[in-house]
Structure formats: structure tokens, C-alpha cells
Length: 296
Image (cartoon, rainbow, N blue to C red):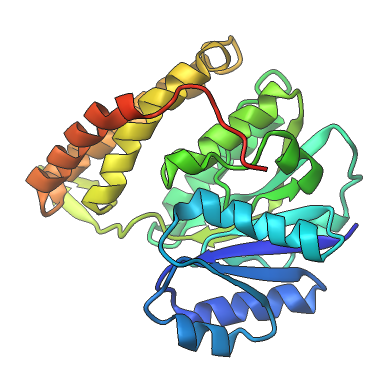
């Protein structure tokens, strides 16, 4: 087994990325940085000279950047597995030990760690992770959808489904990709003993009428892509999303979005801009093709 990694960057914290690259290379991982025209690109490239670098001429989004990174690995290395990472992800020290302890086989296309939000309390993270572990251990429920950061993907299967859908740009890219993996009857296995430490938006704690809640403080552009992309993905994967295995997960997506909007209205700034972005995104969904394209 030969492992590669693709990290997508856009105006990143260079020291954090450097630590991640050091960790990857110490584990003999062929590491590719795909930079989306960062303002600190020159400093980034100088600092990370030990990794391969792919420079985009503009911000092409997460999907195209990941595809370009995997294409680089296919062309220049003999890697058969790829780890995909966001720029703010921090991996647990035992990640590769957990991977190597697995009996990798043709049926499994993806392994993924438990994800904790660095902006949330340990108590809340534990509650969420316990629920996810219970979910992935249930043989009747294969439908837990991970995020792409921290996912360990067989390159053959990445190519099989045609890579990430570049028309989606940001939000829903991983949701769409992993649903395609399931459509090809490939398995995704959760690694309950290793973690990825991530930030989700810029969460802050708010209190209202004695209740505590945590708005994500995503930018208007993120709300735009969420409300543009997800109606398309629901249509695209309608049969799978409404299968007996996925009804709970399908409902939970709507509940999550409903709660996120309420938290945004109650606790975030620039509410009007964000609501306008949601409306525009939902209107612009008509510009997306429901048929999934292949980019690999």
C-alpha cells in the first residue's frame, strides 16, 4: 500500500500546514499541496518545499483542487490510496496506525476518522462522537456520510466515480462524492479509535432566554452555495436518500439546516446579507445540471 495526501489551501495558517506536512512525510506519505491562489502563496511554497505543490491561477474551489491533486498523484506517483485534508485539519497521532491495522479489501473504498470540532466543548464533541460510533456499528445503517477531510480513499474508486463534482465548488462536494461511492456498492468504514480535529465555521457561544447555542458564523458565500447545491443533490440522489437505510439521515439534514438558519438569525451578524445569499443560491440552483459529471 502506497499512500498519498492532498491538502487544499486558501490563505492558510502556514505553521499549522507545515506541522501537518511534517507529520505526513514522517509517515512516508507522498504529500501534494494544491493552492487556490492564496495571498501568502509565495511564503507557503517556500515553507513547504518538502511537499509537491500544484498552483491554481484562481480560487477554483475545493472540488477541482482535490481532483487536480489526485491527478498529480496518479501521474507522478504509484500511490493507490489518497488522504484528503482541509487546511485547518489536525490529525491524531495514531491515524496511520489505525489505517494499517485494517485488512484493506476491494469492497471498502473509504475509511474515515471521527471528527471533533475544535470550537466545541469536549462534552458536546463526546456526545456527537458517541452517536456516530453507535450509528456506524449498526449493520442495518450504512448511511453515515463523513466529511472529505480526513477521508482515506482508494484512488481506483476515486477515479471510478469520476472524482469530485467541480460544478458544486464548495458545499455538498463531499456529500455528493460519498453518495456516489454508495451507489457503486462500495463500503465506507468509520475508524472509531482515531480522530480529526477540525473547525466548523467560526462558532461562538450565545445565550438567549437561558439557553446556550452556537452559531457557525459562516460567510454569506457559504450560505449561497449550501442553498444552491443541496436542492440539486437531493434531486440527484433522490432514490438513495429516500431508501429505508437513509430516511433518518435525510430528515436530520433538514433539521440541521433549519436549526442553523434559526441560530444565524438569532446570533450572527450580517443576517440580511446571509438571507439574501440563501435566496439567490436557491434561485440559481436552476443553473446546475442534475446529471452528475465526471472529471477523472
